[in-house]
Length: 330
Length: 224
Image (cartoon, rainbow over all chains, first blue to last red; front, side, top):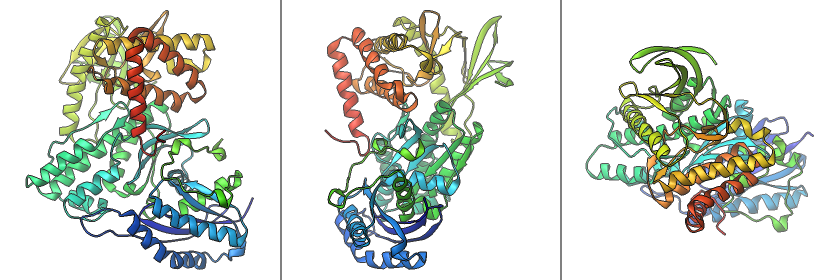
């Protein structure tokens, strides 16, 4: 089957549209990212207003850049969830309108599956243990029996939330990952923080409280940033290592917004080396939220005959990754 | 398996690397003429030494204590020969048998139910004795003749908290659905029957309820 598909992403701070071809070429990947005021996080309604304002321009840019006439699109895909309700609805409206006016199928995509499938496309990973780390997810996954299975996850905050809430306590605006990484790179002074690995799961809430207290107690942002990164990333690397040792797989792939952090990728490489496994990381441009993850996964789903009638095309704020059937991998 | 040389437990051992785990290398060798395994927690380069050393030391000492406590609770575990804290090495009996992880595929339905029933009983005995295993995967259970031997107490702690006992069951469930998806439902059912037979219906219900509550804390879990 050959053709083109257009995908719409709008689960959180990013509104993005992308066109990809059936052979996995990303022809465009236009985006607009909502920036909250300093010291605060994403306000769902404010973000949705930002997406609404940006949508026509982003859509036009994605279509123009791709060089694909609208009439050549085989299907439209959209991120049905999980995510923030008001934001998801903007993407759903854009996708429904396009599908209805072009008379092509509408394909629902799980945002998290999108991160994984785009990662596999871009890195060539075949059957990896996946570490998905973002503002919405901290999960260790492996494919088995028709679904991505969760081998470990955070029991409370995600890694992205930990970094954002810590950064906001210091007065930054979300996403704070890059500022924390830069601050951390200027320190080598480690302050002890709680290291919470339970079985194959991690917990970050105690670590967040302790790191805020260190800031309040006058410790510098750079040394606390360094300590937070070293502790949290080591926890995540340990549980990923456990999943790797347990499954015996030979590839590790890191996806999601936090995958852009070089200290995390460095730790993952050192970890994987011990097991003779390779580490795959998609380019930074595609590790965070983007339309391409929805377009490419939409194509895989479309090929497997997954589509939704427009009248049933709801959004799902809660839609766990391990509840999604993945027929194209079996 | 590769032949390796390790410096541990105050002597150089020559042995076969049996398993390169996340936490430790497990090497088969000899100790005072006995068939032994050396569990060596080697430094993990990706962790800061200050974090790494504390974790390795703490887990080595605790594991030795927990292996003994398991026996007190009537749960078969390996015999411990030597604890070498400076190199974070445990030397213990080599458990001759097959890991349940490798067995599952070949077991008949009846044998599988028996195995998981026994697994559940063992877990409940550990809990009743105020312990949490911390790493109850099918890779950490060895079938030796008639008995199921529990190994790898590296993440075990002393605890009577409902939450911790439920975390133990949660890991079993995650592993079953993650690695043995086809056999997961009946295996889990047999395991819970075994668990209830030791813990009693009241405690078993409470732990399972807590397990459900932990699962609902997972991101994007459906709250029913």
